[in-house]
Image (tube, rainbow, N blue to C red):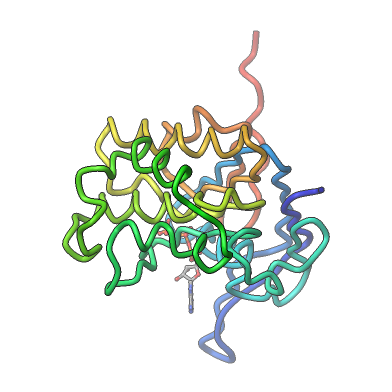
Length: 219
Ligand SMILES: Nc1ncnc2c1ncn2[C@@H]1O[C@H](COP(=O)(O)OP(=O)(O)OP(=O)(O)O)[C@@H](O)[C@H]1O
């Protein structure tokens, strides 16, 4: 098991005069059991890396693999689970059914994991409610719970603390750290220094390139 490997990726959007080059020779890895934060200014390409890692897009050049297989060929939520910026929840379902959907589709009983996630992410008060009848922050935690319900080999989360207050940031960060301890490779695009603090590594993007590590402070 090698986890997520992004190798020499170049990627952009559009053609001709509308062409935007977004990523230039990006390489990074997230090993099973690692939590890696992807930092960088707005527009530096974090969400694009997330889309490629989650297999939502194919890289134009280079490779993006999970345990050696292209992520774009892995559609199973037990392999790769994602929290996109817009959360991607199903409006017609309750909170509980949104979280449990990947498990139901995989034929796995989610009862125990759901109970743990609902408590860990403070969902208990509204698990039976339609997901559209919850706040944006609540929906974001529902999306995090859904991503973790099958203990995927890779979890890709795009700004998963963006709508949370301090206490709930702590809960989301703890749930992600716990998933990593259980063996999931966790990639988190985030501006949130509270995520950087618990990450095994922080990888910085700058204008679509991996930024070098800052020089150590002089002693
Ligand atoms: N579908 C698209 N078509 C054209 N350009 C795009 C598309 N998606 C993203 N871009 C451009 O690619 C660049 C990187 O966008 P991306 O969303 O990956 O950045 P980001 O680092 O996640 O930003 P933020 O922190 O604001 O979410 C931006 O200049 C953006 O405008």
